[in-house]
Length: 355
Image (cartoon, rainbow, N blue to C red):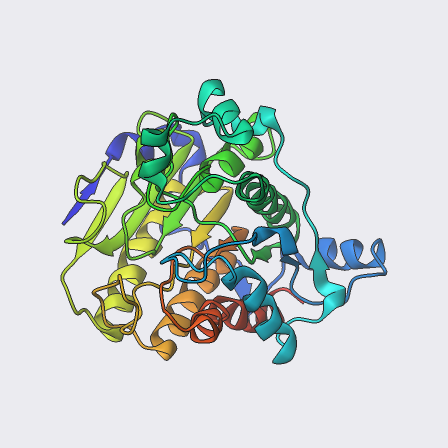
């Protein structure tokens, strides 16, 4: 099922190139020229960094947590351990965020909700919707995670590509959390870029297996943000919101059909909407072994999907930031390895197109 909100595609005709014969792709011999000078400038001005893909991480993405909880809080630190161990990431390329400010949080969420969650005065009913029990550590890590997505977006905007080891909290609504999501980092980062006049248009590409209902609701009347969700149709949330483009998939879809579906829709949307940046939710819950997924992607399928999204964005001169999104497995090492796939794909794309 696909339903496009045409108004956003056609709004501001002077900024949209729609089905034109003009050459859009900025690639030449598989390399991206737009970011090269800025990348060199960035690393010359930051000698503590290597000339590798910028990766945003903080140990406070994780907090003390019950090991038997469905949401594996330790996956964030375990993910970084896997990346370092496999030499996908070296410490010199890691950037550390600060917590998102109150002012950033209330661009998306109501002041009452933000204050109640940060202080722990949130009502039991509101907390129940999140699937979490409140703690000071949880409040702190949620703010840090949002700060990481904001930093990743700003880095990606200027240098082409950046990845954070957290993020993708797309079920959070303005006045309440939902589905293991407290603050909607994708929405907050989008507003941060827009409100500071760093971009004019944002596209959120959400390939988590669950529809990004909170994100869709937040931006339903905002022409500056285009929301694109490819998800398993008969899965959480039962009551879905309307993204600007929703593609609901049947149970059991496998690699080739899935990637063809994403490619067909995304190429057209990027050429039509022409965003200034793509925020990419690379959820791994479409994986065949995910306990909440209901699709049938392999490890290679996830890698090919991620590489395709990043290549399609960068090839058009559009910066891209990745967040890890959802993923559920009782084995934390297996889950962390699965989340590492987008970093492996991004590292390959970075080496081929940006450096």
